[in-house]
Length: 153
Image 1 (spheres, rainbow, N blue to C red):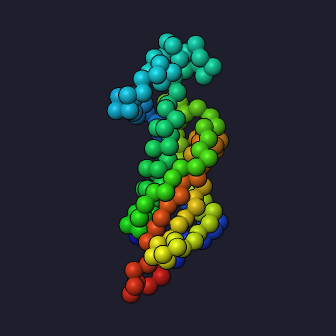
Image 2: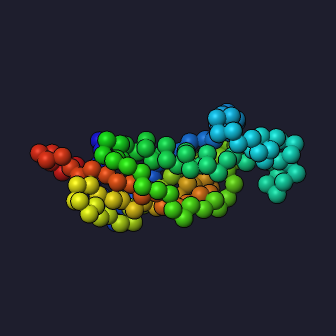
């Protein structure tokens, strides 16, 4: 069941299920993004890099974080528009076989100037299986207010 603007508050935290990154994920992302950098696609080349093996694309991590957050169900049905990705940092490489989950923290909420929607400032942390932050940043979202006649969640 979606949550609406009135249901969110600063400090609220959501943690997603885990998802294991696969060889197929990396190969598919390389194919459709056209990013065939050998650090992602060439095991022999990647073995000689600082990582010692192929790493997943940074933007694959962002995409997985967004998908995991979507599966929470709390933003689906009330989302109006994604407003931007700010201060995103790649802290650790993502490797094939890593199991990641996403923690989403509501940093603040406010009504739009027109008052017909709300803005959620959200902090995303993509965590690996060791609870290390692999990626993090803010992804703000415009959400709808509760439809009139609907009771609280």
